[in-house]
Image 1 (cartoon, rainbow, N blue to C red):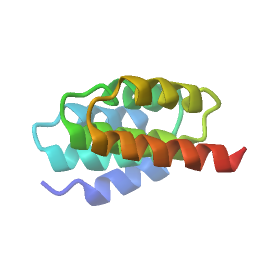
Image 2: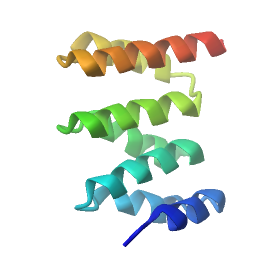
Image 3: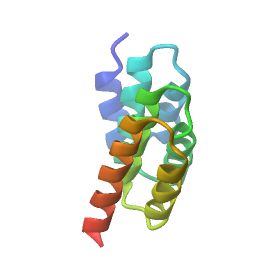
Length: 108
């Protein structure tokens, strides 16, 4: 099933619960789309779930969650990302974190 249209509709209507439910999908592409949608929606529940996803074993899901959170423009995200950068082992993820930190810093 293609969730692209549904996610766009749910995002526009701020249907966080429906979007966040897809975080547990067995289809990685659906999860990636849900992460992107959650980042556009923002809100406490979406941000909590995105934060949790930044610790996922799957590098691609971690990267998507970092990018989504950097678009939310939260005050504490900068500090959180600096801490992630210190502890992250994967060089590709570290690069994404550096970009996210720079994006957040540029907004200040």
